[in-house]
Amino acid sequence: MKREIGALLLLGLLAAASVWSIHRADTLIGEVKEHVGLSEKAVLAGDGKYASEQLDAAFRIWSAARGYTQVLLPHQELDRTSDAFFAAMRELETGEIRAVPAVYEQLRYNLDCISGMEHVTWGTIF
Image 1: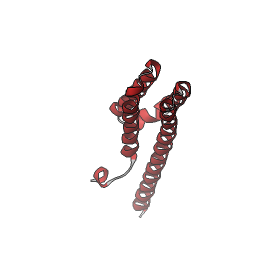
Image 2: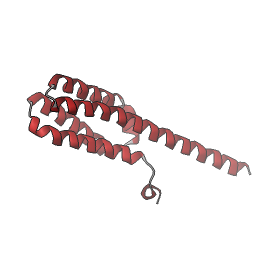
Image 3: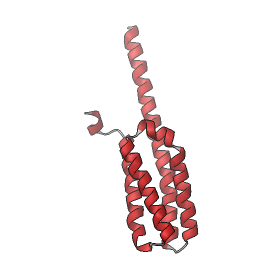
Image 4: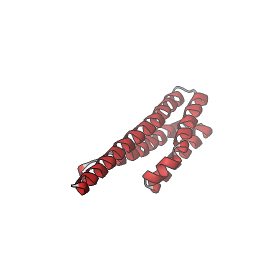
């Protein structure tokens, strides 16, 4: 009976850790996407300075979470997302407004993929 209780407690601990990880990832991605969205709106409105500030804020949040993300997420996804940030920053610096929507779309896609990885689905169970 003690083994069953121990196993049940361990299972409960793993479930709680999973819920915490999903919440943490959703919170992180939500904060980053909020700043990315503000940046995109600002650049489309012609306010490059505010767009750069918001994109920098998003990247600071992303970079500050590196210790968390490197442990729990695949490195290739992290690299793709960082590359998308650098591409967006480069576009803002050059002022190439035509390329901005595609760069921001790629950045949002990468963030959505990371957020989706943390969620439990039938495919991740079986």
